[in-house]
Image (cartoon, rainbow, N blue to C red):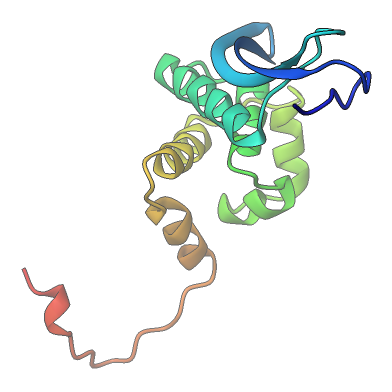
Length: 154
């Protein structure tokens, strides 16, 4: 039996525990598998299970349509994307993104929709939105004459 990394004494057992996540003023709760120390009560949840909680919260936020600085920042973080990396995809300066996330400027609905679509694409295992934004930020010129491969046929 493993010992608790917190107190070093208690045996750690598998449990289902409610994990909470706060985004702005909202608190999202979900029961997740984890480990709990029998002596000190410390609970440990695997990072992959916490990612499930984050994605579930992101999905609820997206479904609500509530555009706020806190929600925008949270969705960006769920993607694992730095502000410096997202700003060029949205074709804005990083300072403007910072203003949106800190409530000093209104988050444009189009930016919200693009970010939300990127999160949904990640959740559903498809990554076209981010790929298309990257291609639009650094397009490759097409030659005058283009021979199409059969894979593009209808």
